[in-house]
Amino acid sequence: MSIQRSPAPSTEEKQKKSLLREASSLLLMLLCAAALVFLLQAYVVQFIRVDGTSMTNTLQNGEIMLISKLDHSYQRNDIVVCHYPNRLDGDINLGASLALSRHTIFVKRLVALPGDTVAITDGKLYVNGAIVPDPEYMGSAPRDYPLRTLGEDEYFVIGDNRFSSHDSRAGDVGPIGLSMLRGKVKYVIWPLTGIRRVE
Image (tube, helix red, strand yellow):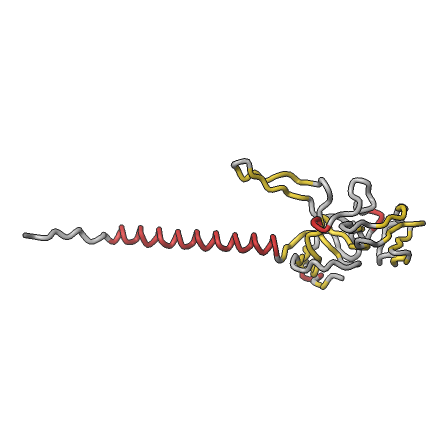
């Protein structure tokens, strides 16, 4: 009784299998890298470009900032990135009735915390009755804001260039909740000539 052996795979078949293994390995590596970048941006750090002049002179239009999302111990005078109520850029449709909402991101200075009183009188910002010094640059004196005591989940944010900033003083924004604070600005990383720690 004779035993028939299957023919050995040809060199061409070996090459095809090798290429398929390499392509699968590369695809898996790219998927893992994309997942890692997504997780880092969602929970650890994020890079955001300054758009506009509301934080002049602290931050300049076009600069790229490094945002830390790990430190949630927000303090007065922190520079933060935040969302505003009902301010969406639109949804990303994931299919099967699933969608991710894209919020417009703003960068502002946190000037008052829950329980603080805040007011702007004659162009001067008062927090808990004390004047907060004007920023280094301000286009003009900001409009007045009536005295208000912030609730237990209310944070008051203002741009350093108070004359040209859309922020908590506006009726369509007001104080924002903790869930709208997305992280602290730590560094400017671009342009290279402007790399610095942000305070």
